[in-house]
Image (cartoon, rainbow, N blue to C red; front, top):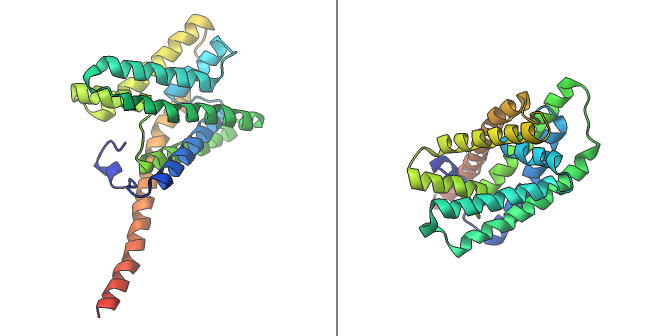
Length: 236
């Protein structure tokens, strides 16, 4: 699941049960953060903006359902891009995708009462939401298990083209934003959920993850020092 050396440094290679627990907790925390960002009402991430817009186009289906449908489309596109590398085990990515969809709908229900009407409270709520979203991503990276179909698609493009992973992800996010805007204009006559908060989300999530990486390494270093001192004392 790690995309680069920096991520590889923090992955957990221990107990599979513990890693799955961390992974599922990460999914829940991530969707809680997404829910708070949505409740802030000043713009959300590209993927969320598209699925949220779809709930306005056809409201009987939930955002979690639309999110799962998007993951299905991404899994199909992954097969089309690199069919020779597509394995039966790739379908396992739909399991966490389903869990994410269920958690998203649950957290949207739980946070339904949150409706800030003052702008600075909206900004603060978005900042808190992005912090939770990023921490959920951090936990999922640390668990180092199954890639979601969306991430699998980006990775497949990376394997096929050799382009920089970050550039591919940026291009993918921009494509989702454009799609969200076009769907909004075509079906409801306006662009929804793409505002200043979308830019704030793009900046903050990456910075939060860097912070969590830094704090984790710091904590690991502090744990290692007493262990080394104890070993030296035992040798003496």
